[in-house]
Image (cartoon, rainbow, N blue to C red; front, side):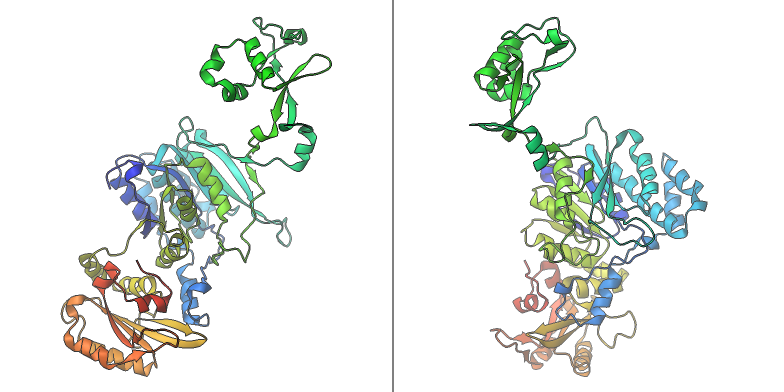
Length: 551
């Protein structure tokens, strides 16, 4: 994409290493194009942040699938090649990042060094994609926040630091031998504070505040009495209804907002101070005390609330029974992301999350009618975001990172055969990939549960596109494996040009699998072609099997 207009941007999910995708986006766009970047990367807390989506499993007792999910969603930051990434940073025009990391190498463990290098490298490229009016939020905890703050200061500049936001994520936490840790930190930076887009958000007044300050009430509602004067004396001021502010060392200060609502900005500027006061009085907005002091009547229904501050205590963690709960241990509440998107992304803007995870940020952006892009290195995360986040919203988006045509699929299969199998087994068919060796004659399986009855479907993937890549002999061996494994169903995946009439006849000979209460029969052995996968031309029964509605 070379067009930089937001109106031409299509919301996108990217599968792959976010560093590679950041570089790709930098090449595709002539100018920075993102309005808001929010990232919630791994916290370097030496935990495996596993994604356990029980509702995606047809058989919750499928321990192999559960183990695979745990492994798939473990943090990936520890795999960073420190030397390689540092060497690239040494080539940056500004050596500050490289110098900070290398000069402090002795104080960091290998794990810390790897984590900070990974973060610094990626945030550097994120900064390049951010518009001059854009904002950046980094969500972290206290394990590495101090060092991350230095990295952000280097990349964004000290002048563009806006806030350290403290989010109280829980009311209490039992931490033996120390004070309970109940908060996370969000660092908020602008690309250029002079041009930054920011919408002030408000929180409701407390009942205590209302009872104290909005004690008056009339037919229009509750109100408080506010000053019509300010400090200092203005020689041009005149007396109004017998009161002159200069007598008390003050000057007139008339509400601009109230006058704008009555007569508009242009007429407001043409009035004298006395005329403005007369107008407010005529509209019942000035009350004169027994001592002759005029006060402005500020009605509660004209007030937006308390401007949001940098300590957020009003957003609780996600309840275990909440509808938005997906089982992701570090999942953040949608209310938290709503606040960030509404304050820092204009209505026609683009929001990006380069550590997409379970997709809270992109789902909120979609719901708030912003365009977005999300990136994750795990195919299971991409599948989860599509099925659990975007599908209910009927979102229009594209996915980049998986093959888009037959040529790409063939290249993928040739260069990365294991990942090719993984794409088909786990992303397309929502199954579990077997180990790289000793797979027992099949590449993956799907555990099924029909009304409490456990069923088993095995998958075989053939990646070669030549006529010898998939043959009837291979299909027959797979059928033998189905019988040996006592599998109820089998799915054989290959390219369309490999399918012969003999192979189709062999499939017909294996019969059908009947499900009580389901009107249509399911072929016991089915050939699914790569071409059908790319075009998303799946039979209805396949979507039923794996709990996915295609199209």
